[in-house]
Image 1 (tube, one colour):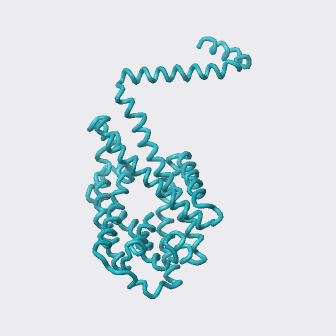
Image 2 (cartoon, one colour):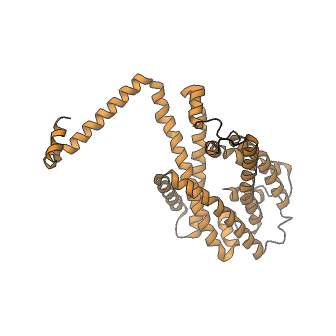
Image 3 (cartoon, one colour):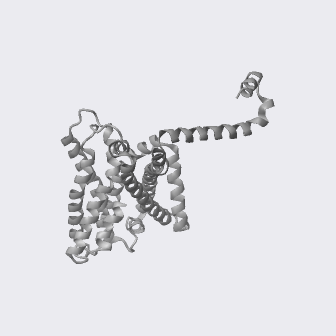
Length: 318
């Protein structure tokens, strides 16, 4: 997504390359402070953000923040699916774009179902893969030759420049939900200033590289789609880049879906139960257990003659 957003500086806002790079840099430096401030407290707050919000404001007061987080995750999930579908369509033109999006959704859901440990393992590998892939793709595109007017194409406008700054800066706060809870795993004596500096530098550099790669590669793209354009501009290395982008987008989609499901469950299940109160919750739990017990009995009753004697006697006392 950062690659596509960086390409917008040249393709959508028609800024010169130097102006787009400067706007991206300013936006990342401004927005990185928001992301770093979310990580800076480290393990000091204690519990997860959702539990702290409910303890501080109660269930009704915590619902707005949960709803905003759910909306952010769902929007990012949809964006990742579209880009993954485009990557798959560019990699295999016989696959329609709609089918590619559906396949990306299925792949992300399967990764999400496997579990949290796999997602975090892939998350560590994805950062390295994205950095190496962006550098390799950028080097290949530059080596193949950029257009002669790459530095002078477009015209500077303050409105366009400010729009790029805003897009680049807003990119960083969108990452805040991803870094708040993992910050709890930092060592207990972690200092706030050290955590802020490390997160600020890491988030800015990590986002700046694909942003700049998109801005530099955009003039060499023959069409308006930067994903397909990257494939064409990179030549024989293009399919490799598309495959890397597809894997990273599937992982990011799975991670976003995993967190979106948690927030939606909190909105639709946990919060209504909190409104019911403790006594009503116990009644609902008892009714649910009784219903499951009756359904299990109906299913297992035809198999009663197959039970061993000791199990049959225990089943008769249910």
